[in-house]
Length: 243
Figure 1 (cartoon, one colour):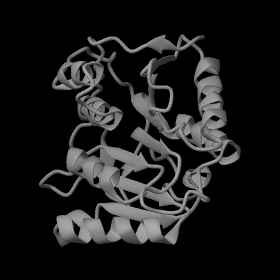
Figure 2: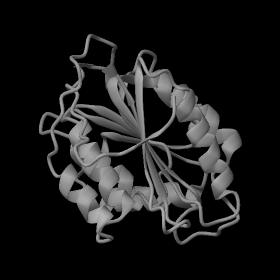
Figure 3: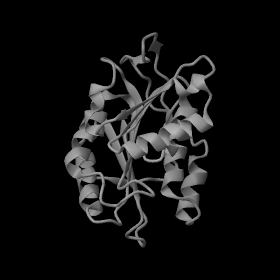
Figure 4: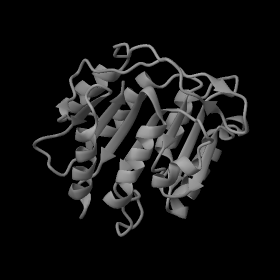
């Protein structure tokens, strides 16, 4: 299937998954009702993007808020400086201590930046709901407990903000990471991919992501792309919903 343009009415709200006590929360596959359409904040963020007043990251976060529920499990596949990790945790953590985030990055400086941000922003009980791994996101299944089902996997592809541009995400590891994300994702879950294309290799990585999304069967996936056509170097947001 081809990629479709994201329309302002798009919003994704699945039901939360059940967890069972374990060293890390375990989310097993179960029947999930059809995705309901609602637009809590998503339409405003999307129109703000169209008007040039909001960034693609803000649109992504608004979509995440419509997908995630308290108690869910999510993955930040590229921790960077930790802002997405923190945002995801605040969307899933509840007062009972449910919800969990797995974060991955290959750079120790990124993991340390994320750890420091979480320590400054969260109390000890909330920090226990995050597991950070200095590991390539293509190996995410090695970290997740067997049977774990995830509601959302977020990718922010490119280089570490504020870091050297010589270390970037690459198609050779991004593609197996996308395949891994598709396997651990629960029905009704979302793979969110923000692709930066203004650096060498960025366009090639975008082509890899688009090819992966286009190959997913329309019967079980819905794939959309948000792009600024007159700003060719602006990041693109791709949203892959597992039905």
